[in-house]
Length: 508
Image (cartoon, rainbow, N blue to C red; front, side, top):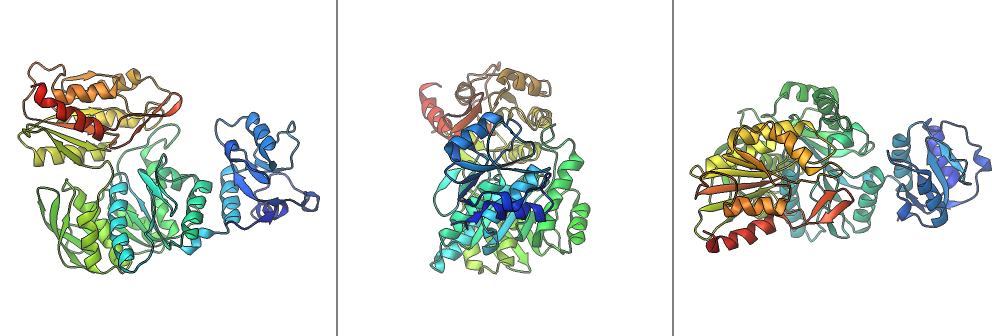
């Protein structure tokens, strides 16, 4: 459990780091032990230090927190109408990080933590490494690794769906604490550009930092104003790790290696180059996945992936490299990769006559779209690609052009639909994408109906090809849709794929 400290302890910590914008008489603060720290008024309990943060913060939240037991608050502005001691700061983000580290007593220092960043492949790589590590942990009768990804989170208590790639600092430290209480010693996490830009992982040291690749993504007024800012944010991972590995196939490789060198790190590399520490060769698709050869510093021999898409071999090589750096014996690397399954990634379903193939994947940016379409063309060359997708509302606006152009170039038909629209009208998002789609297309706002039309061949095409591969992109196995009022239950793409494929014999 977190260590209990009096309120003045937190005030002193902020004072030492020059995070108090207004001096506080420490002796004048009430002798109250802080038993809870939160920025969510719904999670306030007696003796809470409440943090006033967020673009949509309202004084009513602080009033609610006081009624529920808050004994003091931290804020960039005073709220004189609320009779509570205030610790005022000029930087609420930095203050939140410091207070979280103090409240949780730097619990993150008890772990061997791996951080994975990149535009594409973070989740897949994290799942692969998790499968490898868990195979090794089981052999030693030790608990599984903790895991934080954009798909799911496991911290020793339960596995749950994630809504952020990298949680906000207090949520992140709470996961570390749960994992520590469960006796876990190792943690694998995805590290987003937002987490690096805004310091969510500041103070956490990664035993290994993995840089997969870089491409255009997350460009908007509320994320990154341009590619330079996005790239610079990604490169910050090298400032927080002891060792690192890098994909030698990545664009801007020279700048990536230079950033690592500047941080005092000579990273291991993986890829197709002869001088890579982990070299990939002899890649061949199999009925269920891929087989490939690995040679280099750690392991030598053939490895098998039980997951479609030869592009995933690079993600596997990243996991293999990190496994080698962690000293995991080769048999557990093989065992992990042979059994690894990534929720919602590259799931293949087929009709009874195999004329209709459905590929379900979380692909949501240009790089991942290009990889999925390349896989479809390579592994199902006789099938016409039909793509069903949308784009998230309120962020990453540049994706709309990227997805429209990529799908328009590679698909025979496109159906644009809902994908976490949040506060934006679905039709507006789809129409913006549509202007970049240079192939036959239509808009069907209801995602379930869009998927039904694509699979059953009811879309607006003069002649629907009998053999088609339907690409359901963006949502994977998600069972929620982010709409105007927040997250709402919705059938997953995987569930709908199986439902409508089962209906095909009655419809054709």
